[in-house]
Image (cartoon, rainbow, N blue to C red; front, side, top):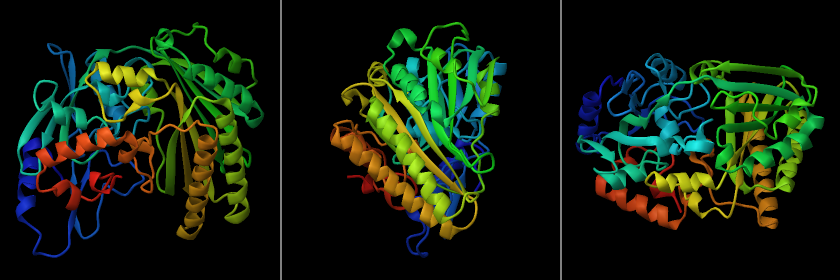
Length: 436
C-alpha cells in the first residue's frame, strides 16, 4: 500500500487493531527509504505500507527547521534543501532513506560537531497504532521524542522529521585509495582523529578496508576526509596519508548534495553485516585488519575470488557524541557511559553468485565478528553499543543501549502503543520485545 500523506497513514494504521486476527496469520511491514539488509521493509503474507511517495523537504525560515518527510533519500533531500539555502545532519550515501537512518541514530560528516542525526531532530510527526497523529518534541510528548532517537520502529510510524537547519556550504571532500602496505599509517591517522577534541570538530574521517573482486585480488584501503567548513589547508593527521603514493585520489569542493549523489550503496547482491564499538586502541585496529585479511583469504579459497566483495568500515566515535546528545535532550544509545573515545567497526560481505555461497560467507563473517569481540574483551577494549543501523539481526542492538534506556523505551512503548501492535503485528527491525 503506497501512502502519499500523513492522513493516508493514519487511515491504514487506524484499522490495524481491529482487523486481521481472524483472517489468518498476516503481518505488516513499513518502508520509508527502502534501504537495509535486514529484510524489514517488506513482508510475505502481509501488507507493506510504502511511504516512499512521502518525500518532500521544505525549509521553514521562521523556525530555522527543515521539515523532511520520511520516504526521501538523502541525495534528493540535500538537493531540495540546497536549493533553499540550507543543509541538515543526514546520511553520507545518497540512496539511504531518511526514516531508518534517523530512527537508528544516523552517523554523518557533521557528527563530530553535532552528534548523531537523531540528536538534531527537534520534532517528530508520528502516526500511532490507534491512528492518532501526534507531534513529539521537547515540549509535547517529550518521552516519545527522546525514545525515537535511536529507538527504531517500536512506537509508531514517523511520517516527518523536523531537523535543525544550517546554511548550506561547500565541503572540502578528499578521497584516497591506498595499497594494503599503508595499513599502519591509516590506523595511526584514525587513532589520532578519534582522539580529537571539539576544536577539530569540523574534520571528519572515515576509513575502510575493502576487497573488490572486479578491481583486484588484493585488499585496498579507502579513506574519505571531509572538512565541513570547506577549509582545505587545515593541519590534521590526514597530512601523513597525503605523503603516501595513492592508487587513486581526488580532492574537491562540493556540497553535501553533490557528495551524496556521488556516493551510492550498491544493491542486487546477497549482503550481510555486523557492527561493534571498541575503545580507540591501535592494537584492536591492527587485529581488525588481520582478521579481515584472513576472512578474505578464507572466502577466496572456499567460494572463489570473483564471488564476493567485502568492506570493513572504521569511523571515530568520540566521547563528545554522548555529551552532545545530553545537551540536546538525550537519546537512547547510551554513549554518555563510554569510558573514552572509540572506533566503530562495521563489517559487510556482498556475494554475487548464489545463496549457498552466501551462507558460507555469512557464517565466516559471524566468526570474524566473534573473533573481534573476543580480542577486544580480552584487553578491556569492548564498548557496549551495537549501532542499530549497521547491526545484524543476530545482534541485540536495543539491549546494548543499557538497562536504563531499555526500561525507558519499554515504558514509552507501552504508553503510546498499549496493545503492542508494533511488537506483534509489525515484526520487522529491532524490537523491544526481543531485546535483552
